[in-house]
Length: 601
Image (tube, rainbow, N blue to C red):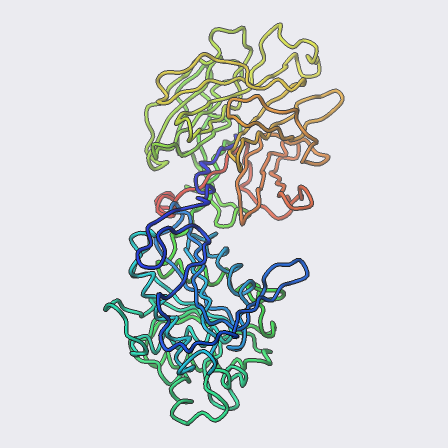
């Protein structure tokens, strides 16, 4: 009644080496690479040296006196990516760069949603190192787009899905690129376009007009006596035209450093020219809230993610499915779906998707479904209270199923039962492990209890590559107590088993955890319970927003519960979830949106 998720999406490639053409022969993940062979319009300044600003722990949080522009590369997991990339321009009033909060941290967030990110350390305008300081940052931004577009194939990126993002003064640079991408500010070595395909502007400086602009950014970029022509040229709300890329904007009303009018005016200019745009104005947040610090401003990353998905810049989010049975399992497979993993709704009016046909009692209890390495959905289930085998079927779409089969996994033993089978796919070995709980008469008698009618389970397993040939059944887990309902997932470098301690005297009836370096074990001793003072069984696990959530059947209370893994341990979130009435022993797994849409029909 649980599920083992195909966890390939959690596998990240720590180092990727690619030929990088004209700048450096090798490229590795998170490496800082120079933007130019020869910086245009540069003025030699030997004593003008870059300065790093460190926090109390010695981490670089900002940079001053930037004269050597670079890109720091954060490539997304190819399995999560559809080729979109974003160049990030940190803010800092054109006097410094908030490179950590508005650069590296944001890049990691983009990676988490399948987008590759490039943190741009652009030149800070000064007459000491530039012939024309007003175009230096723009030159860097244009070249950054061109560099990524030239090398899109080598980085597995889509040359038509390159975005520019900026915070504060970095937002001004991003908006300047969006409206001045075709300005001939330097001699490009080719005709590669510098136009970004979209922009993300967070509390941006947009205008250079008095009363609207951020005066520090204005004076640093244009000087203290800028002409009306220059002020108008770099007031980007005045430069929007029908070719300006679409934009996502976020700002706080109480921003005292950069008035919210900047964002509003840019949005109105985009609207006037029929450019697609989405704007989020928050009541509070001030300036410099980055990915969000408190209140409603914390919501902009989620809103941005939805905007990116709606515009085809990230893969559409997977949906959550829950396979379960009702009653005694006589009517077969039920499915429920959820968009957030908390609120679950039954599909097909909570009627059966598949009626059981095999086994002594022809039941379909504890249905466990996983997506295998072959792209098929594989399901096993309990067919009877007293049979020596399990049920199996497969499907491409969870609607049309193969012929049901009975697998006699315990036919060679004096087994009383074969309950709650599960499947885990081992990607490294390219094989499946099926495992279940059985009581074998005469074994492990030291933990046998009359209160459990003599049932005294251990976990057994078999392996297969094709669900036609199976290895000899073996003992998988003997924890020294009556154990049932195991579910195993690949997490980090090893495997994690969630299991039920079925001990009746003294009462346990809770969920515990064991670990192993290998799917087939050996597994460690079970740890302390992660569930509370209620009887829990049938754990199933999924990662939601970076946290593992374990669902389980509070079977004596006739409802479902859940706990979430946090830095402080396991938090009970049972009051935050809801399942269809009568849900029993389910398994959770993810499916593409297209599959979920078909199921909804």
